[in-house]
Length: 80
Image 1 (cartoon, rainbow, N blue to C red):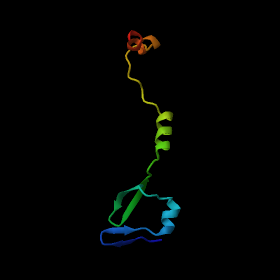
Image 2: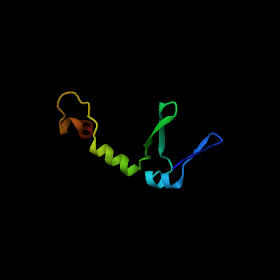
Image 3: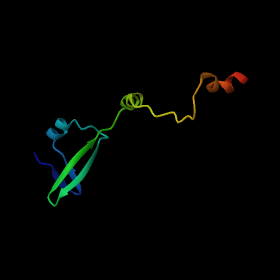
Image 4: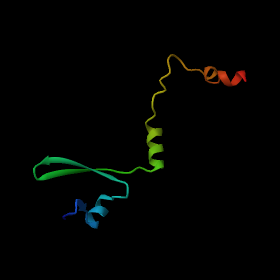
């Protein structure tokens, strides 16, 4: 299959779009491999649900020094 270049744009055939499951918002990175060849990498647009699941599966460290206790977390709340 071939794509068409016209007026500074590349038009991708619908068969390729369907096969790669491209959606609006997906980014396509072009990696130049030589004078006449290019590798494409698709960076899919992620939904809010996908982003949330990714964050839950890969939590960031709390960056707290020392031990963290419930009392120290709610210390300011108890005073009021």
